[in-house]
Length: 207
Image (cartoon, rainbow, N blue to C red; front, side, top):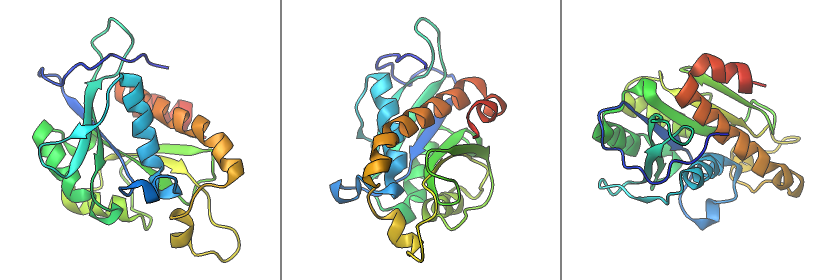
């Protein structure tokens, strides 16, 4: 959709967006539904032609760059993955947001959503946590829920399976065939949100 801008550092006075991919750290969690936020920011980092590096806080890994077409001064963005577990994400988000002077309304949290069917998504500003520990932690640390959310659908578990067990399990074989397209579309939604605004993004991506 948008073209990578290389490894432009976030150094000028243009406002910065902080894009947080929610998930748990370590390879044992990497394929879980709960980690789809990590997959999306990994895709965005690849588009920027950059790799995650440790933030000076020691509690997160970040990528700095810009979104936008080649030759245009697109918005500045910091991609982030916390180094802690999901329910402690808020502290690192608050630290990184303060470092880059990012207000809550320019924070984007990408997360799994049980109440949306797999292979669909919703983008919104504000709202409740809906039992999501990562969102609850961010809300508590920022002191507000008025940040953007890219809600990537994973659907409800079949039968009487515990939702907590379901989110901490791998995608099915059938879902894994579709997942790269879902991740790509979610990354497109993040870029559209940052470059064109919420209304345009909702019109295009809220399925």
